[in-house]
Amino acid sequence: MGKMRKMEKNATEQALSLVNDSVRKLKAYHLEPEEYAVKLNQNENPHDWPAEVKERAARFLVERPWNRYPNFVPDALKEKLARYAGVAPANVIVGNGSNEMLLVLLLSFAAKAKSAVICSPTFTVYKLLCDGMDTRTVNVSLDNNLQYDVNAIKKAVSDNPGSMLIICSPNNPVGNTLSEDDFKSILDIHTGVCILDQAYVEFGGFDGIKFLPDYPNLIIARTFSKAMAAAGLRLGYMIGAAEMIAEINKIKLPYNINFFTEYTASLILENTAIIKDTVSVIIDERDKLVNRLAALPFENVYPSEANFILVRTPQKQKLFDRLKKDGILIRDVSSYHLLENCLRISVGTKDENIKLCESLDNFFTQN
Ligand SMILES: Cc1ncc(COP(=O)(O)O)c(C=O)c1O
Image 1 (cartoon, rainbow, N blue to C red):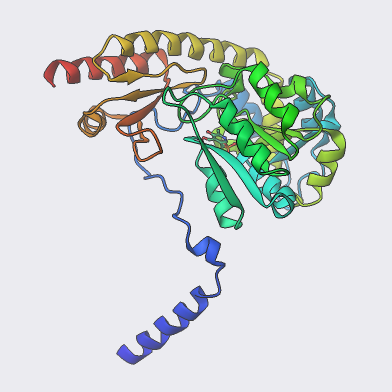
Image 2: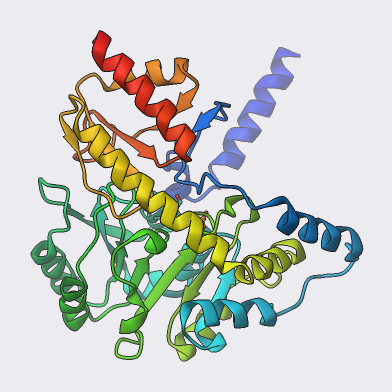
């Protein structure tokens, strides 16, 4: 028995040696599956969809045959998305979350680009995908105020001609944005593809779409996981020059959107007034929350154009644990570059934000 297990172990080790080194070296992207009454750790929209809308989707789910593939091209959804974004359907490609879209972009561009310029700290999936695909990354640090260092980005793209530049604006996990003029000045000198991740664009910062007519090397990634309150549906989309989207489309897997997501995302786009309402509530709550947090003894409360707020305190672990005890889960981002002692708090519903502030008040009174 012992010998058998040893042989099995050797066989497993041999099999493991077949995995790409770039993948074996990765640290798995991981999130504890924890249940808390107040969930402020994933930058989701805290307002769920009204029951009437969900019931329409549920009826469709029951009536639609499950044994048949979804549409080969989700034309109706692409048309609605194009109208929502102010572009033509040929400028749009959809995927199973914007994470999948980022992977499709790497598949489309990485081998030729050879390197990717990424700012840091930013959304960790960019580096994870680049590392996993053996694409060299050139890291450009944010400045000490956690703002984009535009000159350093320009230097990095000039030093690495033809590289993929990945910019997140508003930037997760900080909430900073790039100004429209600075972005344009980078596009003016960048010779490679530029991926602009605008997962949080509905909450603030400039909208990159206006640059598309002049910069066909620009691709914008967006998602239904944040403002659209549909993280569970897994829908992301990209917008770019029609000719570029047609090329990227060749490497995207067929049928990557299931029929339920396709139908429900269309339904959401018929209800944009609801999205607008919840987004304006979140923005209002965010601005109030920033002021409330700034009145507490945090070392820093960073301004945010997104639906989350970054704070810094030497008591970060004690505070994180105390909030958990009070049923509130936030995100510890203290291991990120420049973010020692930092925590990221998603903006919740009005009630959730009141609970958060009560818990914070109690903590700082006692500590
Ligand atoms: C900047 C950024 N881009 C993309 C994503 C992933 O979005 P999706 O749920 O569409 O895969 C996230 C999620 O947190 C994000 O913060």
